[in-house]
Image (cartoon, rainbow, N blue to C red; front, side, top):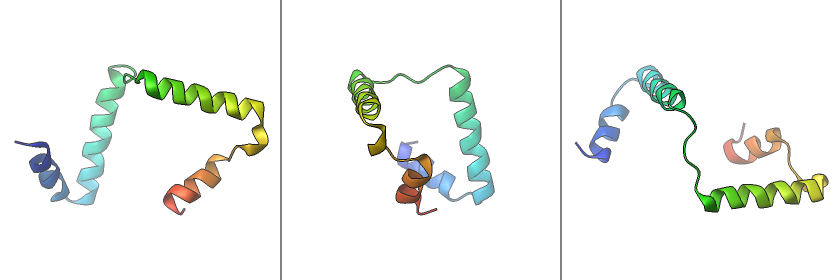
Length: 72
């Protein structure tokens, strides 16, 4: 079964079951410990953190970011 086949099978399930399945997978992954983060992403996080501490007024609250990303 390919990843696309599996995704199609999951998408055919009721939304409640999809959510329960996704939650279960995330919980299992979280129990194994933190996911590996690439050096490139670590560097990006560090640069953004430094930029924020250099001038916090340029940062955005999570509420603003969430609205931009999800419209909620």
